[in-house]
Amino acid sequence: RHPAGRMPARMAQSYPAADRAKAERVFDNMLTGYGQVAGQLGVPQNDVAGAVAAFIAGSWMAYHARDVADADFPVLVAQMRDVLRSTPDFVNASTASKQDLHEQFAILGTTMALTRAQLQRQPNAALSAHMKDAARSYLAGFLKMDPDRLVIDGKGLSIR
Image 1 (cartoon, rainbow, N blue to C red):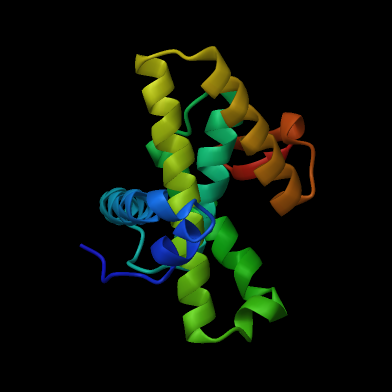
Image 2 (cartoon, rainbow, N blue to C red):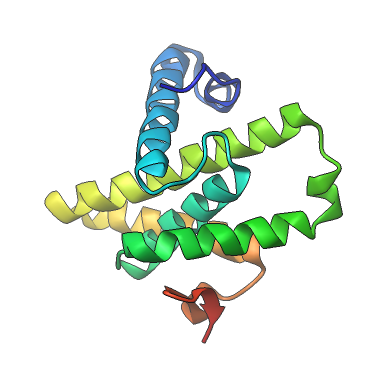
């Protein structure tokens, strides 16, 4: 189990007061779930590159309605590690800021992936459309690229 993070409470602040405690629990559960899956896939605990990869993979899966193979995930993590290492704002960020980034990306990525899995079991057209819109927004905003052109495979993330 992960140590209690700051982001579940911080992210819950955007919810109505009556819903904040529940939202914080959900976000905390997403962070815990991410940690378990990441560990199974060989991603070190609190690894920001792993959380960024989970965010991209979860959003990509929700947008394209396709899974990212477990074997392809470590390639994406390594790719994100290289990107982060060459990003001065990240390299120079405080440890606390890096931890916050890790938690936020882990929570968002896990939420996208788990919602996709839930929609596969219980289809819901409105929720599917909302997820696809959110995923498009996340991918386009974060990667500054058209999500329709993004591919995740054994080579990691590439542009078609």
